[in-house]
Amino acid sequence: MTADRMAKEAAPQAKRNTADAEQLYRDLKFIRRVEETIAVIYPSDKIKSPVHLSIGQESIAVGICSALRPDDIVAGTYRGHALFLAKGGDLNAMMAELYGKTTGCSGGKGGSMHLVGFDQGILGTSAIVGSTIPIAVGYAMALKREGKGRVVTVFMGDGATEEGVFYESVNFAALHKLPIVFVCENNGYAIYTALNKRWSSSTICDRVKGFGVPVQRFETGDVFEIRDALHSHLNGIRQDNAGPLFFECLTYRWLEHVGPHEDYNLGHRSRDEAKFWLENDQVALTGAMIDPARRAIIDEEIETRIARAVEFAETSPLPTDGELYANVFAP
View 1 (cartoon, rainbow, N blue to C red):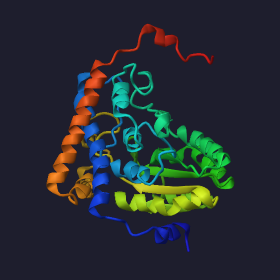
View 2: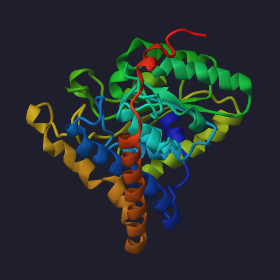
View 3: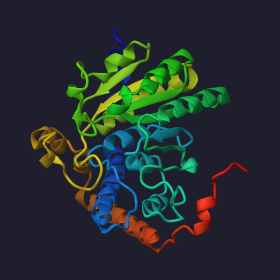
View 4: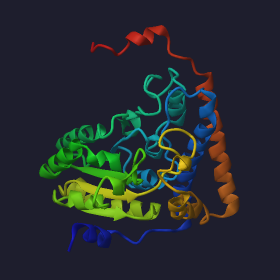
């Protein structure tokens, strides 16, 4: 029996009760509305850094993070808003960071692509493709030595699996049985180049199997399926020295690679291929499981929270000139 088949059979039946759906919907809708708000603000030039929006991809971060413990660690990519918020990152600090304000999570120096939240177990995101993968592996080795059952999850795009450091990291993690979950958010494009123009085989899982790492592929972005599959593996990773795990989660970004607009006019992809993902939007599907009156209350709470974060960012101070010299040299 193959490793990915074993993983599928081990996963419990996805729970789809109303209580479950409400929490997942709250997280999904919160992230969606935060990013839609960023898309509206961005053309005004109040946001001082490029933004890579996760609209359409939210279910991966929410599914994974809802299975993790608060003291587990995550690391991500420059398309990291969803991960930051799903792991409990401070929205005020994130929004202020986008504005380049001193109250931002990186002091206004990092912008959208460099989000960090150590108090919430967010190791950080990075603009350099694949760069957080070996860092996360090193952190996983530290957690294994710590012996408290904590796990690292590192997110990457499909393009990052083409970096040499990805294979070195997977091999090292497998060799040392490290408590790490590699999550590939496979939206089918490395910037504007489709996966089928870069690889003869479209299944990234096949490349990882050779390292002896259990793999599982998710083809619809189902937030329940992703969450429950990770749940089924975590005890083994925490307690039984089961080693690393690789999830390939197919998904689709609704907007352009970087920025707030659509990009179908550029000719590298068509609206037809987006149809499946629009029809299977996890925000809408989980929302439909909730009583409309209750959903309206949740939506209103989300809007209030976002409005307060925007106000916080706009009224926060810009860094002073002295910040140019802070954190340049080690003390």
